[in-house]
Image (cartoon, rainbow, N blue to C red; front, side, top):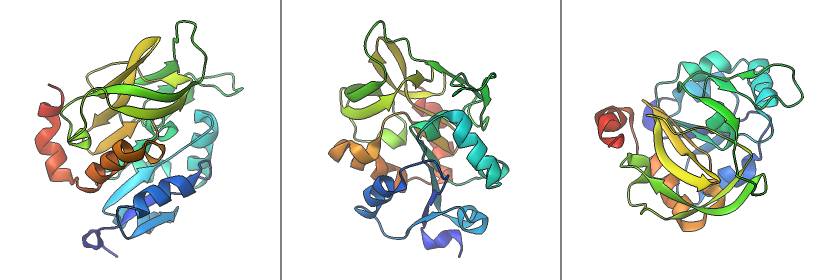
Length: 218
């Protein structure tokens, strides 16, 4: 298999509900594969990194499968979903019973800390509005669009933020650097808007991402 096959590989992290993510992609494209096979992941046209649970457990699963360095070396478009987005950062304060912070994949230079909900219930769960940037992942997505969130930890606003959301504080609803993108919300649970974002991801290639990096920050 080579990248001309136009294949989307969802990484089998061993710590995610893969069915809903797979079904969401299968509704809008063919050639969706769930796998932890290194060769398939390297050869994919694009890669999805899902995840649920704690950062520590997820990173342990990736290390056990030998996937950390592989993911770090990918050059095709890669989309992290929910915890998968948080794993793209350098460090997570979500210890999950551990005594130390969790070292993540280090793909995007930012950290993960507990969401300051200003007294509102945690986890932040349900539909909330986002403010997207001009990044191609959000092409055709107007400001104020509702997406579905479930999380207690967040990535702060930074130069790598490509969409924001407010729940107590304003935080990154999506981040990106080069070919790596992550969304804190669940596009697979976000109806038509989520499906549009997944369609946008399917349309991306590395050349287009490189060409739009600066524009996305405006």
